[in-house]
Length: 500
Image (cartoon, rainbow, N blue to C red; front, side):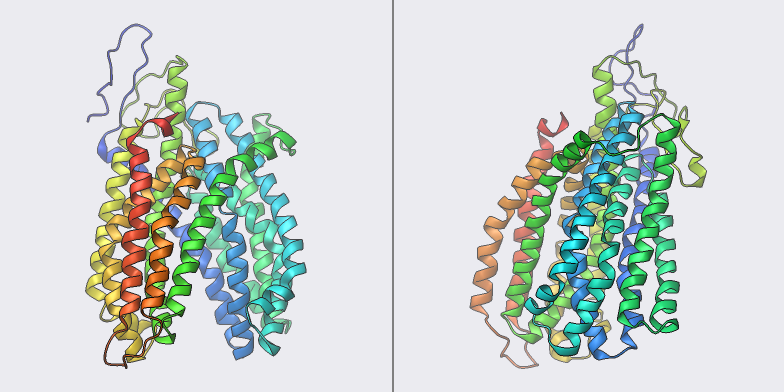
């Protein structure tokens, strides 16, 4: 459809709903998704840096880091709703032309992140010994894990503020700033860890402290431009009780959704563990490849989130009979910039821009998700005989991993659709439905995973025959669980309730 094509009849004082050309919308999607992918990849670099630094301190320190980082990343992962909720709210207000309200909502989310982070830091520090013991660590490994958790706990407020501030910037259609800050934070983490771990001889304590400091500085870097923009518009920066309640209310359904996903992942690991060490090791290989692919798909989902929220906000403003003249083909024409978009800042969507139809965004981002998933699946399938050898030299593990990798590869197009459906519904603020859908998807999957674990309780077929249990577990996860997610979210996007 041409950018000049109007949807509807244009008359005197009529509102024009112009859709962007496909190339312009594609460019917009990529301009959001590519930096978002960079930011997503930059975050795991923190763990890699810590592992590389601590690994030279000895086996006990590295094992302790592995355990402690699992606890820390799980804790932070539970609060990822701070990013999702602020993206949806801010994008919708921005699209409706309520930029000041969008900034206020984003600041409320940041204050909520700070409060939850402070409470979480106290709780993590207090329960660190119990958590380490519950995970079975002993002696020097337990001491190393406790030390890392105690040292990194003060950085939890910064970590959660990073989530909320990143979500706010995404809602303002700026994914470049989080990418720049995440990259700079990863580099800073190298310097801090080297200085604290080796320079001052603090060992694993220095690693935890360095990560905490880097995350805190990242939070300050992300919050600063938002505070500056808020003050320029006369938006109060101080926390509001009503704003904190609203942010928490928007985020709680997404917390339930996150818990349902974590449950599915834990059940999968439990079922793989029941099949023996070879199957569990092979499962880790397949999971690593799946998670890497998820970064690319999640980046596209982030773009969908921001664009759908903005489109719905524009539609809301249009329904209120606010004039919206048609725009030209340039996606940035006629905007009033909060800051220079050429320097990674966001530009406000003004009424001079065309209203991007929600259906256009849905179709185009879904196409990107499926095509990207198909491409990733083909790469994984072709390289499946060699990929496991990047992780292990054990022939039994390689033999067991290859069939499961092929199953994972076959489901990548489906995963691309699932991620994009999720992003669309999150951008629409449809968290309550996502929470219910998340619980529903566990109904077919959990019993099936239990059946698989009991049917193939251990890999006892020798190194020349792949353990079949892991293959069927990945069939259950990649096709039954992901399929259930595709059905529940796909059917929802075909309706109209989420567009309100």
